Image (tube, rainbow, N blue to C red; front, side, top):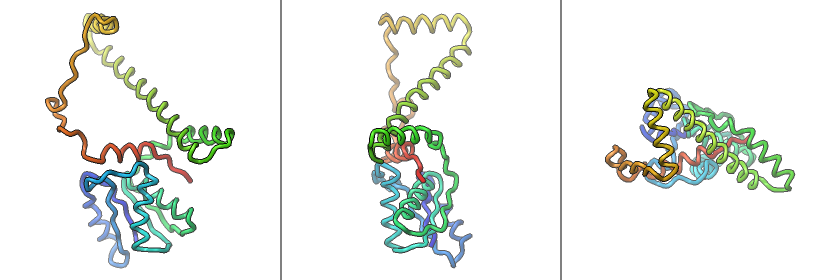
Length: 215
């Protein structure tokens, strides 16, 4: 059997019909939907998502070898499932990962730094994970600040000199309390649906952003 985490929280994974046709009758296909697709609240981490999906997989196939795959964010969960199965002594013959962006790979140096810090302090793996998330939060914070400043500088340079002067004067006035800030735009009037994002969407994305793959 091939267990595939379709990872499509928008289209519902209808592309899996074609995948099933290509695999043929000799290869049973089980498609697992992403957490939050049916209005449920996703687990707080990719590791917990993998644990939850493994319960389903093992109910259908108690022993390996296992064939796993995933599309987009489902690829992350499939990878974590394979890691957990291997750690439990099971055989994973193949993990197919499709269109899964490895954006978190750039934080690997933070993981090494946190791991070294933990070993020197005599801590455990949970402390390493906590340190990684703290370091990543700091890195993301200052990276976002830098992107904002770069974008603001580009927009500032696009204006003619008289307008640039007015912007500087207004900014100085706000800093000194001489000019009040503009009122925040109404989200409904701005075209944002009332109630914000679909239930579970932010929790799912937060779990994916905070996940760092381990060997």
